[in-house]
Image (cartoon, rainbow, N blue to C red; front, side, top):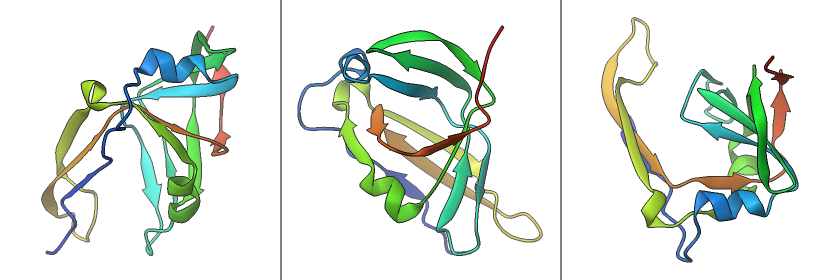
Length: 130
């Protein structure tokens, strides 16, 4: 079946490390790796999670969070991208399962990116880890 197998976000052109990117954020969440996902039939509205979540306060990691998800639609999400770290931080990840079709179908997919900043994205289910 036809699928878009590889979608990657190009690294930023200016030198920027994740530490430098975080230092410019007053209040936010740093999400590490991919997690749960849900996307509608038109591939427009979505909700994603991650594997690790950290609270950012005044430019510093302030502690771990749990139960974090974010939701948006495709146009608003990509328009909210304000910074992307440079190629030194770039990572390519992949999977042999893309989660589509009935019955389930298998197709290799890959997605790559450097750490990126998105402003104003709706975050839900956030609670501080004890």
